[in-house]
Length: 201
Ligand SMILES: Cc1cc2nc3c(=O)[nH]c(=O)nc-3n(C[C@H](O)[C@H](O)[C@H](O)COP(=O)(O)O)c2cc1C
Image 1 (spheres, rainbow, N blue to C red):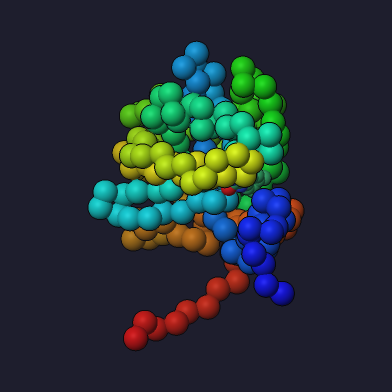
Image 2 (cartoon, rainbow, N blue to C red):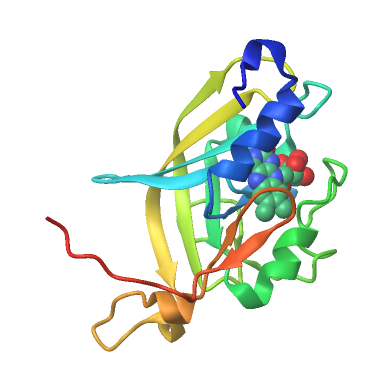
């Protein structure tokens, strides 16, 4: 099979992409509206991209009607966000926050989650997440326009919080304790519990 995006619908292209770019980490992004309403949504077009300064990126694609998601509206207006890391036990709550609620309604309470005040930025953290990164927007890059076009949000991590329960004896974040999940295609997820090691050449 060969796929030419020029003759394939954005929806089908999206399905092919997320089926083969796997597993994807999940950035659980909290933001706040100019009126002060917190917003929370998961994004698996997400990654860390540098360490000096520490930088992250996520992409919120436009909705099917071409409109921008609440997260994009908020980061454009306030230039701040928090990345919360999703451990396996809180996967259901993460999934609940992907529901499309009205702009004036926060996803925290309906998903049974607790707002925790951030230190450097206005959007609250997810208290139940074991790692949270307070971020300032570095840039927002639009790739295309219309349905499913990307709004690439690049952020600089101003402060990283890690719960003591996920640290090993050397004070490093222990992947066994953090127990993150990954997103595959469609509604599939994976755990990160089976691992192997390879020496670098
Ligand atoms: C695990 C998971 C990963 C997701 N990843 C993305 C993504 O990378 N980009 C995106 O635009 N939407 C993604 N979504 C859908 C958004 O979370 C959803 O559209 C949400 O309602 C957006 O919220 P907002 O309008 O409050 O910003 C994902 C949903 C789930 C459950």
